Length: 255
Image (cartoon, rainbow, N blue to C red; front, side):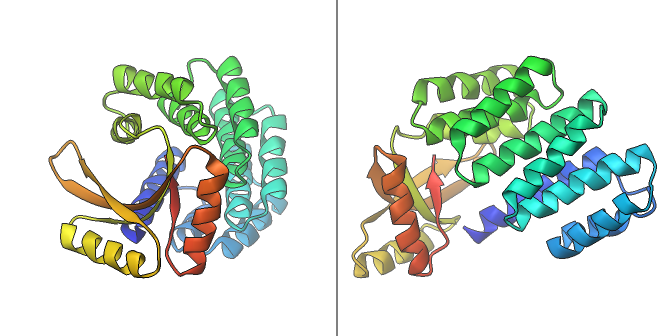
């Protein structure tokens, strides 16, 4: 499971660095702090850059990074306000889209999924041809999945598969569209089946029924995901996730 989170973090960081680059003075230190997951430092450096009367380009980057750091530190309302300030700066379409996506991630992390979807609707209205369209569709799908709106979620996953076969989001869309229509809590993902079975036995000793979901990626590599529960309501899965987390298992709700 930790490998999945590490890979996901690496992809996100790569996306951020692709967007912004490393060249501007005062910005590279912030990006280094992001790479080190030192978000208090990111917050401090971003605010210092904002206060230093930077160029407009640097100001937009600093605002984005400030919002990002606030979100990672759990300061969700502050983070949304920062992204809203970026929207109010009459920046380019590109920065507008990034600010909206930042607000969407805030709502999703707070499990305010309808607010997340409403914000995505606004983004699609103002930027129907956004360069981040496949990412927007994935976030729409995830929000609808969390609300058990399976048909709507499938629509967006299908759009990614059909319209963006070379996107980063393609493989995940393929996986999500194969998910059963219920909620489960994932506590591990392994490339070796024996390790998954060991975790299942460990969970069973603690009174938790666990099972393996076997997936194969586009390169033919197999993953054995250990999950617990099959629920029709998200709230039931959230309760289980909390219980498993208290037992010391890193947990994530699927889909």
